[in-house]
Length: 359
Ligand SMILES: *Cc1c(COP(=O)(O)O)cnc(C)c1O
Image (cartoon, rainbow, N blue to C red):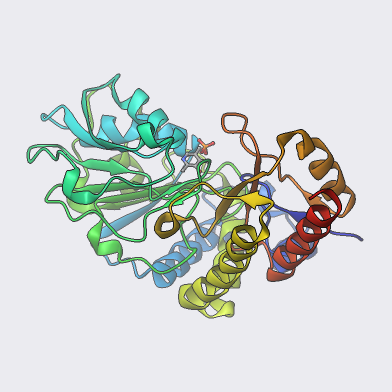
């Protein structure tokens, strides 16, 4: 079996050990005689799997009992609607920061439900930086402040948390579990699973319990955080197989040494790649150095007419999904947790050879 290196932005690479364990247990999970996919979500097996996954996630991220951990569906995009529907309350106005394509989508959706104040934007800078915090026009009465700690498309990451007096809401889809964070600074954290957690189909919401119970009367029941919390994410059928696989990823992370150990590996991977790009004279990354993403590394070639040949050669070398997002062009290497350091080494070696041949 030849596994290739997958630099896809999402759905993304999964740890090989996790895939192999799932394969071993696929048709007969731990002697139960059934596949996880065939089990009732009311069964002790699935309830046990979900409980354990939650426990491991709480341990990895240091999530206190002040927070509910919800296994939901609908992706991060579903949360663009669920957040205003659950958190605006009587206030009807929220602050949003615009640092890229995902911020923009969250803003556009929130405008359907209430007043959105864009308190800072880096659009004029082509989303290559983060506006300095002292320039943000914060509203003290906002129901919450929403931002995107890692912009998956632009490759821009916050290495600090906005210090605000309203609940801080973060779309962590492409950065969750990549390094430790202080959960207590946040009102709500959400993430689609398909980048750093597991397969597509699961959405994780970590919400401070005092924010529950304020949903708009028209909030769909499947999106109501209070309903999900009261029913331990089993009001309706949750994505059982995706929760199981996420649970295996959490165990894999724990075995690796937790998020500190993961961060050290991720920093090494990213530093190698950026430092090669910067010194190459052939490739370039447009993002301000202090805000360069550890997970998503966009880069351009000196001459974009070489893009096609670069991608074809990469594919031949077993390096997949390096094409940049259609909205920005160029290349993008997503180097999430499950992308091994050898993959980054192989990518750099290929980039070097390509530059030498075409430079
Ligand atoms: C991938 C991604 C999304 C969209 O996630 P879906 O699960 O496809 O809705 C939203 N925000 C960020 C930051 C992402 O990386």
